[in-house]
Length: 86
Image (cartoon, rainbow, N blue to C red; front, side, top):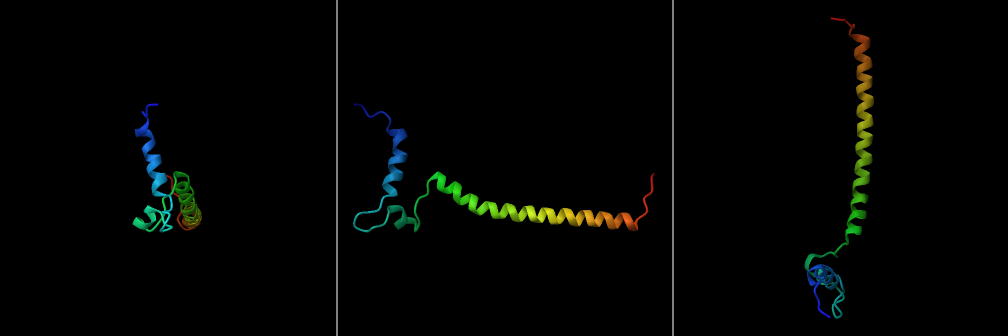
């Protein structure tokens, strides 16, 4: 058989070779080079969700607090400043 799909297969082969523990050392080449293991796209997505979700919750709380403060300020202004129609 002719091997005509190397271009498409090489990134997967490279990922597999770089993320496999070296028999004698017990570490992957990537870990020895960068001090951490490679992550699959699914792992990256999960990691991002763990980071982003608390941030989004914090921003939602800040937005709600700001909205409440704005409404309270509007009420105070309505009570103290007479409304005049031009």
